[in-house]
Amino acid sequence: MSERPWYATSFGEEYLRAYAPYVSPQRTARDVEGILALLALRPGSVVLDLCCGQGRHAIALAERGYRVTGLDLSGVLLARARADAHARGVAVRWVRADMREIPFEGAFDAVINVFTSFGYLETEEEDRKVLAAVHRALLPGGRFLLELAHREDLARRYAAPAVEVEEHADGVRVVWESRFDAGTERYEARGTVRFPDGRTAEVYHSLRSYAPAELARMLDAAGLRVRGRYGGLDGSALSPESRRLVVVSEKAGVPSPADRLLPR
Image 1 (tube, rainbow, N blue to C red):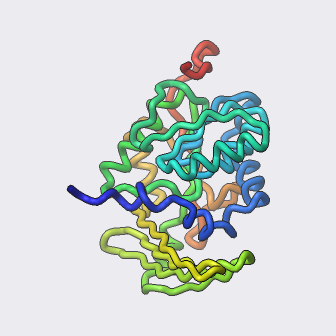
Image 2: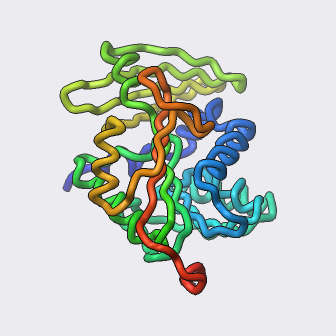
């Protein structure tokens, strides 16, 4: 019997501690401002946060009056999301599922997939299944926002294996070993996390990195027409030096008002 894939086991408490500096409330607020601007979402729109993690974007959107569903594979991160939503007094529907198997059809005005949560799967064919599932989940005219690390930046920074050390304010120390394989187009990073009490843990991720033109072809094949490409959620112009890549695409058609209710 084969082992479970890395993305089914790597998103737990160790992940939350290792990535804590990158998910501050201030960054989340800026992200949400950018998401709303790039999607031109109307008040009360129905949104799916695909691979929502600990729910930071989903909760922030719900606080602004959007009807939000958060979907993730990690039970640990969804438990954190539920607790945080309850503490902040907002209603979000949380769903545990694989991103290839979104259990909704024609339900959302928008789907967001942010913080480099695309490309985890083993093959391009599997990644295409995610885009097909997004297409099914969207209402006609619905938009999909995909935000991830820019392939050009990863290839430039990690063509040779690199070691980086991070010292966090809470005493956590993370040593990252990262590399980009031009043959497979995959970026891999392994982090050794040392906690203040001396405990250690390991976090790992591996993702297939796609160039903007590749993503455009994949989205088009899934029935999602690209409406814009950017160098970040701030709407900046995309360039070879951009650290991030944002692609906004749209499902053909015009929704009817009756289609805007989520399935119960």
